Amino acid sequence: MNVIFLGPPGAGKGTQSKRLEEQYGLVQISTGDMLRAEVARGSDIGKQAKSLMDAGKLVPDELIIAMLHSRIGQPDCAKGFILDGFPRTLGQADALDKMLSAENKKIDVVLFLDVDEDILADRISGRFTCSKCGATYNEVSKPPKKEGECDVCGSHEFKRRADDKRETVVERLKEYRNLTAPILPFYEKTGRLYKINGMLPTAQVTADIEAVMAGK
Ligand code: AP5
Image (cartoon, rainbow, N blue to C red; front, side, top):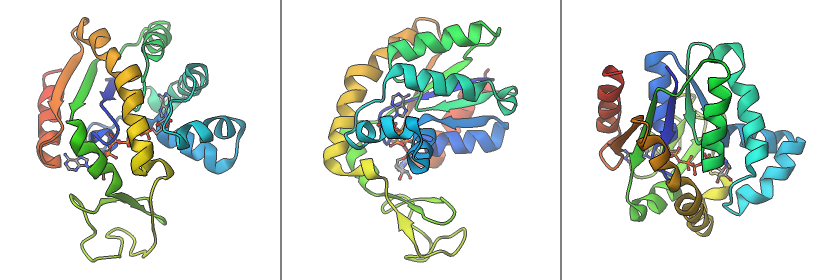
């Protein structure tokens, strides 16, 4: 089974993909995480992507399509994958269908996490992760059990994403509205799009996603 998560920044795509990955044994592929790893490595891709990401802009289609193509060709993706953050433009959606059909594969379900814009900025600015093990937290919806200490590894060091500043979030939302939201009809017309209310508590969102997956 191959799944796409669509939704604006902060909608919960990463949170829900990790849950689905554990439950269905699918591989989560986050293009944002892949790009951040390239930036941290200082690779050519990372150098091209960094300033755009810091400004809240999308990186060019050619770069991201090539990166994704090579990732889904790896053996661990044979059983199925979850795309978190891809596609983000009509060009990417079209390229994805073409690269999959060349291998007799397809996207089975597209889960659209619908969240009102006024909620997103608060969610994103409250997000932080453990610097040591990468466990994810949120000041409001998911604080560590003991303040200042990671539940998973006990570390006291946390970090925030460079693009989670409020002014950058405004740009990311603009990019979403202009370039990513137009993808929704692309999937709707082929009957693959399922709209999920992403404003409900995390566990309820997971349950609603599982109900869709159970019918597939
Ligand atoms: P990327 O890393 O993909 O960021 P994003 O799409 O902006 O999404 P986020 O990771 O911010 O949010 P999310 O939906 O995963 O929410 P999360 O689960 O973390 O992309 C970053 C940049 O990389 C882009 O701006 C672009 O430059 C570049 N890029 C990446 N892919 C690209 C592509 N395909 N093409 C071009 N450029 C690309 O949740 C957010 C917070 O809310 C968390 O704290 C979480 O705990 C909390 N939360 C989640 N669900 C709930 C809930 N139901 N109730 C309350 N709180 C919740």
